Image 1 (cartoon, helix red, strand yellow):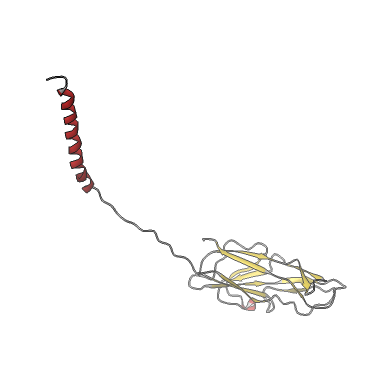
Image 2: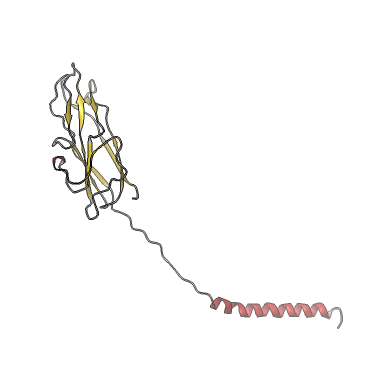
Length: 187
């Protein structure tokens, strides 16, 4: 063999091997398999909150504090509707005082560590507590609260408190905002 033919022979051998690889390549693809899976999710019911009854102290007198229990007919009531049995986080923003409509006088309001209850039944009557979390701190709700129970999609929060009018409290109507924020917590 001449020196020129040896490189030519190697090039032809390489070309034949490359052609064989191309021809046999599709056979290797036929030996594979493909599966298609799926991803799914279910969005829970929208969480809704409604203030259904005000914490109503009624008539108060100068210098005489007045309390309303969370189990009294005049307790504040919030209803929460959503996915039954789903865990929620609850935050309540409570006022430090009630004010006149013009804002020229204020009256102290306070909330104790047992001034709220969460009824996990469809009950919205604070005087007829069903089941749930009774006498909890409205500043720090438990992390275990749910929207109702499995099969029921409503809970209610009952709020009590105490107003402390001064001895020279101006006559008139006083009010303050109680803001309830709830969110699903994934439990």
